[in-house]
Image (cartoon, rainbow, N blue to C red; front, side, top):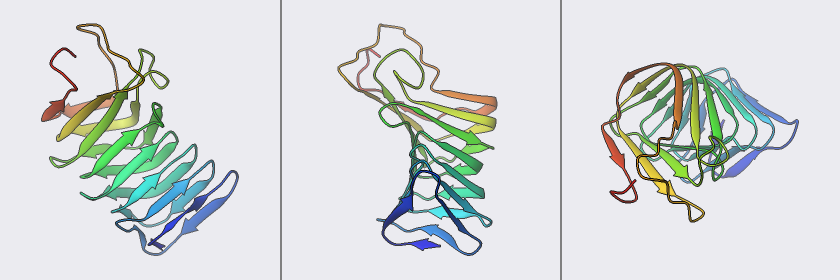
Length: 173
């Protein structure tokens, strides 16, 4: 499957591939309540949106131009060298596997309240999260957190390393 346009799945529908699995730059692949599965590693140079669906592959490589976003689940070892944006303003994205974020990777997190998944984005990793790169926080819905407020936007069975950079909307957050 090489995706050069916008396509996807809807409720109870499935899209599967056993050959080349690439979402090209400028293209969008959406699992909107359905399932996308691949028996080979996937490469995402465009946008892969989980919607409320599922994506399954041995591994998924998000390239520098790629974006993984949505509120569904991904069953794969994820290698992020592009952007991962959990949620749907806001929401929770679950990675059933390992999460690796390289030095060029960005984790985008929206803060619009104090409850994980509904007030702010959350990335849930069921195995190990290996961290580097950037976390970029954005405030939404007029929300402004209290000074020294804490938000657990990433959970994992285990974490190694740390993010290299945090981008905040202001020095007061």
